Length: 146
Image 1 (cartoon, rainbow, N blue to C red):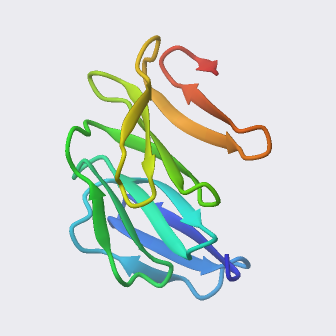
Image 2: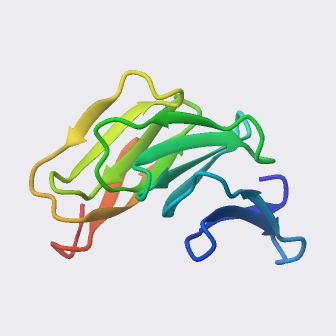
Image 3: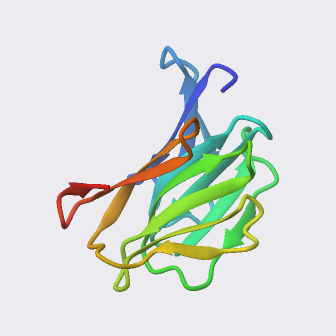
């Protein structure tokens, strides 16, 4: 979005971005981050969402790192992957803690609900097919993609 690629950097505990050619690397968020993991861009509202398995939170900020907000901080064990459907206003994430599950909520964190909580081991990869309205996940323990 806007010519940037965004990533989480666990080594320096930061959210970063750079131009698509790799130049102009910038650090956007460095405070109160412990183990940043999944990251997703809302290309409609120009927001950046991420999971942190160290603080057990899902957070959001503007694409430039301003207006940071904690969206979900309760009942998260090991939040991992995150994907968005900004057109419909939903976010989806995996939690591969003691009771693994895949959840969703509105982009503001409201109306949270569990989508899948059976037959999961370590759900960590997520992909959303917006055309077919399907959510796919990879499980590192069961070695399955569903």
